[in-house]
Each structure stands twice: as structure tokens, then as C-alpha cells.
Image (cartoon, rainbow, N blue to C red):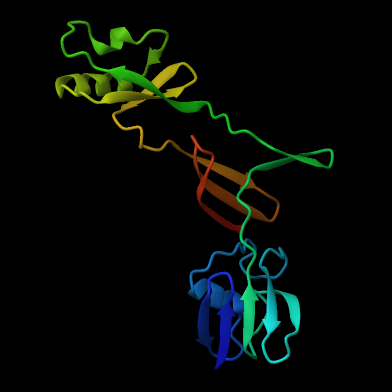
Length: 196
């Protein structure tokens, strides 16, 4: 049996000799990008290991490294910042999605005027018109928020907490990467990749 200490996760795991380090990482549900599915050519599964008996450190590909002795593993945390490069310089990119959330106000229960008529300068999708009608019938006293695409209200929600999600897909020559994004904050909520 081999003992593996995952430094970032502060976790000790025991496994059989000759287990691939990548397989152990997957079995322990530790995040690491492996877009080539452990074939050894993308080189994204690099980790820094320290052999505990000698103190020697080296960088290995987890998809090809077989465990033969007790080690400590440091897996670099993924950098989730959105960066664009131009002419050798990098810069942060501000996320300005075309779909956004806007507070529309509260339905005035004393008014005979439909709530839709109090919102000026916007077009309404059929779905948004139905939702407004539903909120008016329910006599909602909550502030309503519109989910807009440019100048069209696509949907109506009664909670500022509801997230607007989007998907980004990167079709590369060796792999496909997909990202689930919170369009308001730009946060990456989940991601997945596989061999193209």
C-alpha cells in the first residue's frame, strides 16, 4: 500500500501500488483538468510531487505517474479569471452580457392601470406578459425583476436572488471545454471538458 498526502486538500489516502495518480485523483473527487482523457498529450494534468522518503520534488503528469512510494501531492488550483491576450499583453475583460436583470418595481394594487403599462421603453415577450398577469392575479407585493435581452423583457421574476445562467463553449483542436456562468457576476459555477 502507498500513502498519498494531498497537500491542498489536507487529505491522506492509501491505495494499491502502481495505481495511476490521475485515477486516484478522480476517485477522490479532486478537481483537475484532464481534457485528453489521460492519454498524456495535453499535459494539463501536471502536479508537483514530493517523495517522502527522499524529500525529492518533481513535476509529473498524473495520467502517466504510477504510485510506488509514499508521496505528497500539490495540485495547482485552477485560475478561473477570464483573460484575453493581445500582442503578448494580457488584460482583464469586463463581462457585459446582453442578457441582464433589472428591477421593474412593485405592482400598485390600487391602480386600475395594468403593471405592463407602467414600464416604458421596453418590448415584452409573450412569456413576460403571461408572468406579469400571473403576478397581478396573485396580488404580489414583492418587487419584480425583468430578465432582459437588450431592450426586450424575456421573463419576470420576483426575486433578486434568482441567477441568470449562461454557457460558454470553447471548441479547440484537441478538446472541448464548457463553462456554466453566472452572467451577472461572471463567476464560473461549473466546468467540464473532453477530448475533441
